Image 1: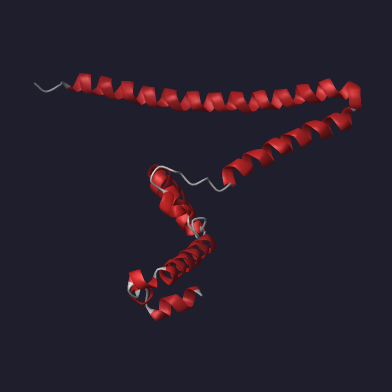
Image 2 (image 1 turned 90 degrees about the horizontal axis):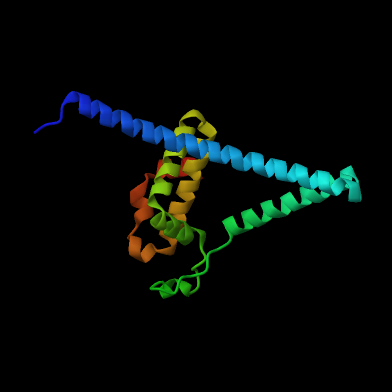
Length: 170
């Protein structure tokens, strides 16, 4: 028994409403978080102003915010510790190479990598400088990876791109 058109439309409306609700809730929660942080910084500045003066209070709260920012970016960019469950082969020399880390990151987060590739693809359509930069970076990465595994690749560098294309990117 096939569902009728009214029930399909009703289900579709409910699904769209649920998606819109989730997106709006994320936007509102983000706005509340940013506003709360802003108000917290203002409250800290006002609380410290009688003790160290207005400029001193602003310097202290600004320094605290910078420390939080530095901590955030440090945690974001630090090299992860090697895992012990089945990845002991990566603990040798070269385990910290950027290419291997990038490959592992893409393997662990395929959806995020695809979304990032889509965003870069949309951005590079409008900016020829970014397109040239990405192509140059890609060629350098391909040359480095083919140079490190030349015995395994079997001449990948020569077969991947004609000589005239390689010369334009160098």
